[in-house]
Image (cartoon, rainbow, N blue to C red; front, top):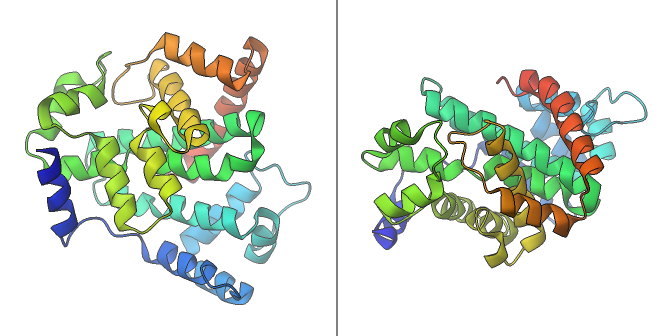
Amino acid sequence: MSSDIISKLEELDDLPALPQTAKKVIDILNKPDFSFAELVSVISKDMNITASILKLANSALYSPKSEIRNLTQAITFLGANNIKNLVIALSTKTLFENFKASLLIQKVWEHSVAVAIYSRIVALKISNKISEEVFLIGMLHDLGIIVMNQYIKNYEEMISEIYGSDLSLHEKEKELFDITHAEVGAKLVELWNLPEIYSDSIRYHHSSEDSKYKEYAKIVEYSDLVLSKNNMNIVNYTDEDRIEQLRNEFGIDVETSDEIDEMFNEVYQYEKELFKL
């Protein structure tokens, strides 16, 4: 069944497309001599994304030394790669809005934002150079749930049965459908032609030891488990031993763990308004 669904995904014309603003930004940044002015022009045409970037740039998540007042300053401060990741992350909200009537989709969006923020904070503590990539991976890691809910019969019924339980959604999907949201999400990101680091990390965010990009996938896996433990997911499945193992690998002691949780709680309360949770 797994290969059948993947084949269908490749053939479907109505799969969620990469939002236009994000696609244009990626196209611009792929040019070796891209125009800074063109980048500003494309992003500024999307008022929601522009406003969100300015708010994010001035938030505790980035902590600028002085106020960022316009898009040009924001791009200069954050850098082109960070802007690209933010535009993609912010653009994905439109994919969720198409299903806004669904409690499931709203919960997935809330969890995705939480994992993105938590992952960035963890990365800032242990490996600052990958903080923007894990933010985007966190934001996209559960996109497969949207696709499976749309195209697999009885998927939402299965979610209703395990919602709020301590069962593993990942394992339940594998048992019933022979494919998981991690695999489907990775395939969607591949169809969007995003770099392998994103599709691979999404595919293995429940089994990061198998990832080619372990450092990235492990941070997202850790964040996902911690937040599920704190009832910030569709299910409350967690693995205390795995959390402890990853925490030790990261070199995160109790004090640092508490600092991460405290910063997350502070930032998340602010970002909830920004991401319209």
